[in-house]
Image (cartoon, rainbow, N blue to C red):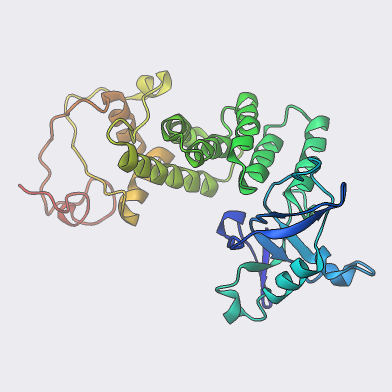
Length: 326
């Protein structure tokens, strides 16, 4: 997604765009019936009116919701009745100030390959045609899952995400998104293993920007914290160790207990460092996972005025030892 704000152009993920607040009427071009559907997130691209000779205003509107005609089952083509078009045009923000609370975003809605599709069903058809040409491409299945999940259909997104993981178990985006899709459907316990897999695989993830890896780790941790608050202690924040983790965990009869507050930016960042394999933290994670959630390792004494062993440069009492009583 590319969103324009005045002279500036910036990329914005679909999930950060506002939802349109109520259903709109759409006319099915296959059977001619008009019915009401929720449009999802709505984007308007005024450039469409300039580059397409004879284009009408409706060709500048893009919708993320995934829906089919209730009368004939077709996924389009869709047309905007006059009253729908008038309502949408009246909702377009005219300046940056009015755009803050607007329910329509001004910009260009594009897929990874630069193509634009006004409706989710059109984007789905495009991606399925690409998958037919390259059925072993996990990236394409993940993109298809995103279209369906962003289209308010997490139930349909599960299958393409699973297929992406079958092809490439190291696809962290698919692992994370599959967890979110299950959670969206109220299946929190089924979501946990996928968030755990993101944490387990983050350190050695290849072929993906490390900034994106860290973002996936951060959001997965937040989701796990939220699930634990909702479902109780049966939800573990730390994944069970795999054979690789156990093999690389150094034996130690004694190590320090550290507390991390995941509700703070600092605490969340420290735990993200552990899963990302930041020197000094990745080794600690291996010990924590290998020890197991049910064990209680013995604590070694750490002077409160000594430098914090986490490597932050602060005194222990002002960092990981904050709030501890002696």
